[in-house]
Image (cartoon, rainbow, N blue to C red):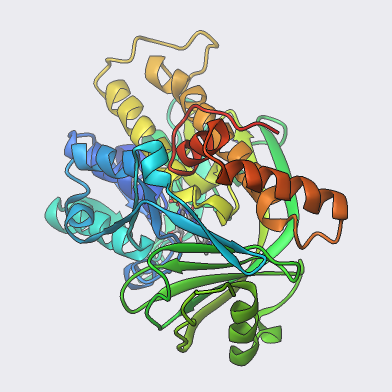
Length: 421
Ligand code: RFL
């Protein structure tokens, strides 16, 4: 890797302990924890504050994640305002089947829109805490990440000036399309990928929910889902062919297809409304191992993508971020026990163990998501064998016993547990 571009002609303008790249859930949790613990940090975000506070995405938070944020004073509004859900419904063959996940697992989901979480975490870091957050930064570059003093540079969107930040560590929290992972030399980390071979049309409807919680419709025409987000907004998903475009899905076609795929005897009709967001998502997944390279540590979607089949991505991002923040705080205070056994210069004790500590949960969630994907998409696969095995798994989930309990535990975010088949 080239040495950092810090010649006298391009002076290092500042030094900070940690540069956090990306103000999504991962970056904001890291920045809040560092700032609260007195570790100097700068948060760089490519988008504007207004835009990231409006970007719709996740809604389901696992209970452990909310409790963990609450321990650090970061979940006040979630605990005040979020609904919780403890069951969901499968619909297939015209019938409704309720899965009592809270009863089976002892845990509940919190329903809290991601833009609201981002807004809360930004208010805590940048407003209440007066933390250093820089929005709209252009052309972020990472240099010297395999050395002792990496440099992150960016162009100021207003003045056009190039800024250089020398630091001890970089938290790469810039999502699936960021620069952090791309800055790691080819071959230095392993990237494993899996494509589920399906796509979902994700829509947000300006309409009240039509059921109390989540409804998964399993249908030969494709999977469909309903997810209550707030009294005014509901998320819906429709399985579509890979490569499909939103242009093929006008308003009436979306509602027609949802009515078919979510139909069941005794189910109330869907409350329709304008579709305020429409996006086609390919269901693909990846994992980067290890999650650290030199002084760069990846967290959240930059390190692993889990298709939103089981609502896991943001939860994993929070898990990584909490562990990374702890390790960075320990390193900053010289409390992390010296260099790691593998000679990883990033780190030291806590940081050397960071990747491994995250990956256990990452792989557990990837495996669950893959398992669930097979169940949800079996009926529409066009393959009678896959449809038959998916139906067998589904039956096991709906009968009291080991699989029902294991499923509920994994769905609600237990790190252990295993399903058969
Ligand atoms: P994010 O949220 O993508 O944030 C990354 C931030 O980095 C910025 N950025 C840069 N900043 C500076 N320089 C650069 N060069 C940069 N490049 C990018 C971006 O602007 C952005 O602000 O990643 P993070 O923090 O890792 O969080 C991950 C989660 O956002 C993601 O996993 C979830 O949204 C996934 N997901 C769900 N997860 C759940 O746990 N529960 C759910 O219910 C759930 N539902 C969903 C979802 C994802 C969805 N989509 C759209 C993929 C529903 C959907 C439809």
